Image (cartoon, rainbow, N blue to C red; front, side, top):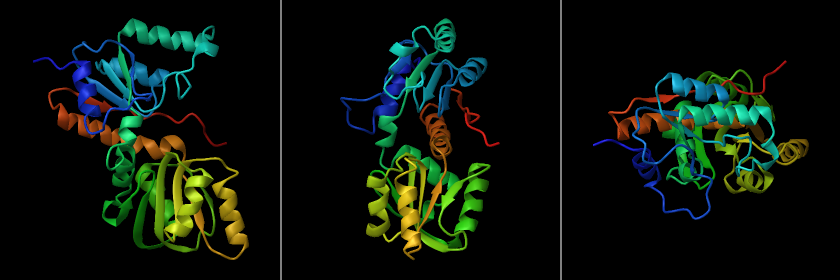
Amino acid sequence: MPITVQNVLDKLMEPVEHLQNTVDTLKSGHPTTQVKGIATAFMATHKVIEQTIALGANLLITHEGIYFSHHDHTEFLEKDPVYNEKRRLITESGLAIYRFHDYLHRYKPDGIMAGLIKALDWQSYIVENQPAATILSIPSMTLAEISEHIKGRLGIQFLRFAGDLSMKCTRIGLLAGYRGGGSLCIPLYEQENLDLIIYGEGPEWETPEYVRDTNDQGKQRNLIVLGHAESEEPGMSYLAQCIQTMFPSIPTYFIPVNHALQVI
């Protein structure tokens, strides 16, 4: 029996109760289309879309939005040539694109976090999976050693940090994506007695400034900022593995992105 786009989406949403307000919708294509191949990616960039088509896949599952907006606001883009060229490519290809964000983050444990922890090889160090953070207790390592471990495991060329590279760390709070805000991270330091928080992205005037003041007061705390994509791509790679298990007859691929911002 043919497997349709809707069959795949239903299976992906199955672990989570129905969400009333969500960005997780089919952005292009038709739910009744038979799936010939599936690709997952952190971001449905123009290049990722071209690669998906070249692979012969006709369903692309993206974590973030297609058109540079979390909530799909495209009114300001209607006359933009880049937007219209990307839209033309999608329409003419017949590619089905599904945004898989809210449901994946509500998996237990969070699907994106599960992929990140697996990529870091820290599964055995989990103390607690909280809704937005995972608390870890790792063997004592300096902040510099942890940074090198992260760069090696995730293939990241650089990290940003606040704190003391020579400080030994054991208790870590890990948060993927845009979860680096002060209202979430700052209480974690005290509540969980953390030496280090690692997050994807957050306002630079919040948690980093708290860590600066903490250290200026003589209390040692540390922060590592991975980058949004760098923290969530492992989760989409992990998702591709899960989908291949769910639908073994359908070729499934993970397509990494070349990150938009580079260092000069």
